[in-house]
Image (cartoon, rainbow, N blue to C red):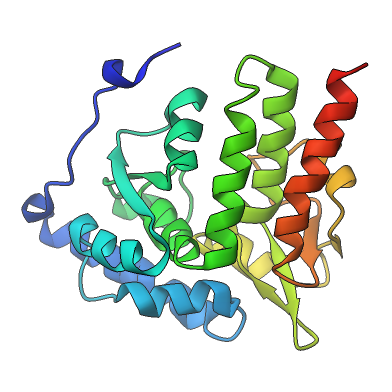
Length: 248
């Protein structure tokens, strides 16, 4: 497994973004915001406002970190793409979140297999400005770094992350709202997840841990929080589940 010093970490070369890249960011941003304006959870929308995201320009990581540090103590750092679990979780336990600084091409507006800056920054970073969600991520990572050599446990942690941070829904004032980054950065998933064809079900940690996630189609179910504070309880339930698993 790669170690920290073996990863070629890029820096965001902000001045090198082209007019085309800024145009792509603007198109993606406006298109998503038009759709999610009334269906995104305030836990996401408040973060967008706090961090000063707009369609006018690609976010500058340095400026984002000034606001993010002040809000929750978190920071983002540039990564070339997906990184090894040990680095991802150790840095997340230290309130650091890796984000790509490259943007999809015009012909990839609707779908991209790997996470780009729009997914990472637009989708994920506003959640880091929320105290409850950011504490959940920190706690989840702290559990993960104790079990990095246990593939089964890491899979369970990945499932909980997937069905909350990536594809989570929450009920607020009687309405289903979106907080998952994987939904909010995808126009297709955004349109689908609240339709009659989607399958929203009550949030249940044990059920999540037994539900493999899928990457190549819309989710077959969306787990719905009644309160964002269920995420705090979820980590404790995860710990109990792992303990029972590891003592057998």
